[in-house]
Length: 520
Image 1 (cartoon, rainbow, N blue to C red):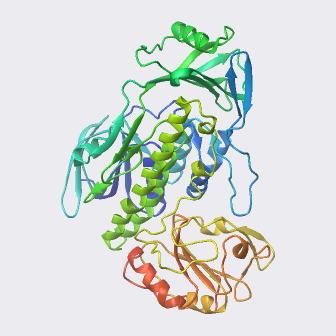
Image 2 (image 1 turned 90 degrees about the horizontal axis):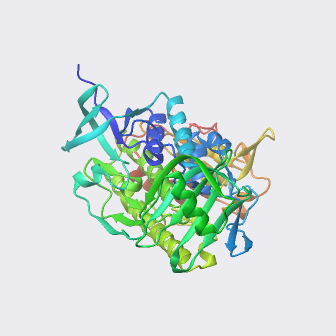
Image 3 (image 1 turned 90 degrees about the vertical axis):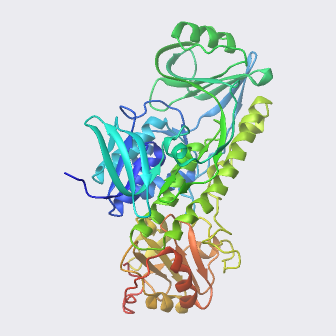
């Protein structure tokens, strides 16, 4: 019996692929996620989640499990002979109304994967492990993929295929997309998750050596495991058995008390610095490590991949619902410059560690990804209106608002979900928002009216102080939390023009004028 045509086939069930699956599934689209591995990844690998990624996970419904499975980072302990120098890698900040999760979160990647897989299962989806992509073809309307799983080979027809299948991506290779950059074959890092005795767990320990060599040990939360990283000399053979690994680490640290047992996961990592020359062809796209790979510094790779998927998800859903397919061109146009910039940051940090540059250990705003912007891209023209602090393409900050009954509500709570959000601050913008017709198909619109004209108040004036909204401003926020449009006058005409490339063409009737501030 032939299966119905899928909306999207996703190859790879890591953070990028599963994020995309969650986003599409919650929008009502049919999705299959296949992964050639027999089971979920079970190591620490990419262990840092940035503040912006935590906001994405909150929207998707995976944040609670991630927070339960991790912690903030400990102080670094830099070992210099007999001395151990405490070093704060990153400033620990308090949450604010506009930045609810200001600190990078330490969590083994396996727990992040499980949190995302669990979120997908709650939506009725699942990952098909032990199922590999063999090849695929595409035409103007569909992609036909041959896959092999526990039940044998089968042919899958989908409207789109997305390869989130890692740095050695079969999808990217079959498309013939160049993966430009370099792999430093002589530069190898042994990474090990192991139970460790003889080392305090209140520090991320680092033993730097001349010539770029170092040994590091990061305590993994809620366990007796450390993630060990040993950067090898160019002519040194990696050792992974327990006895020789212990001897290698004791030699590097000068501490005979350190003992590794119960090794759970090992890897020999070669720093890759690569960026795909395009993010897809026709109905086949790539995301995450399939599109860009990074050195292990600054906790950027996984986070960039998750946000690739978050950018792509709503656009794919809109096109599947009838929007112009040219909207998918904006995926590459917006995400490729971000990946290029992040690659530069990761390389700088990694090379700084080799030079024993203390600033390379420190983490700050550049790594948090809160300031990344699509301003100047195809959906955020440079000549558009702006507020005192924000432009189209910028991340929309959070805010604390109040309902008419005095109940507090976060702006992010109102933005959460697979919809656009429009915020009217002022009488004329509120009237324009009432009259705005929105498509019946695709992502709906949630309309928020602030002030006397609406049911929401901003008693702390966060929208004025932080967001820079003027007395009569209309802001459209995309489903991925970035600003799609700002209008300070001619609100209705301008927002109608702005939404055209992002929405299906069929329009509904305007919202009834008797319900300003209500949700659609």
